[in-house]
Length: 169
Image 1 (tube, one colour):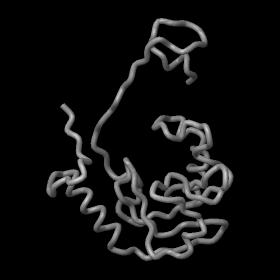
Image 2: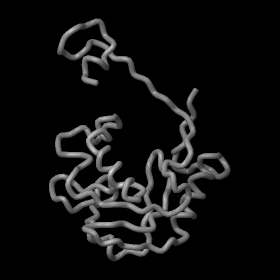
Image 3: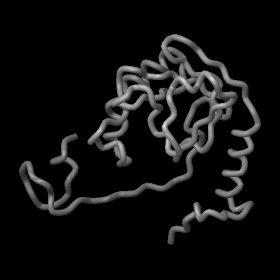
Image 4: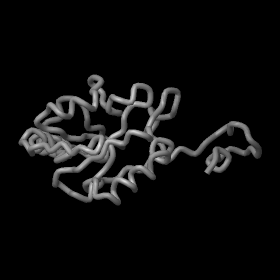
């Protein structure tokens, strides 16, 4: 779809619409990965980038995912759970890491790896393959404890001290 197909305002032509229809769907979801609670096997994609400088990577929309669907399918066809992407400028930092930049080479020197995100919750990583080398990780209790605690907060079993839960009226 192009921009003209997405707008809802009364305009015909290649120009920004005066109005748009904004839809939000909210529903509980199961585990994002088919592995369920089993550890993930990730592949580091070196050629395609999920986000680029000046791109739309900071906006949750199909524009985040469409450019890398081929890389995800290729990885899954080879038995991987999902793909890690490197930054498009230096090609050495793992994308979507918030606290600090993490070089992909650091993955060789850690004991435990897990993913977290909106649809993921917390998922343990069993291996990451980079440049043809598979790095194995031991499943530790840290990610399992964090996952249990997050679910308890989501279900209201323990108090949400960080205001993560937003009641929708």
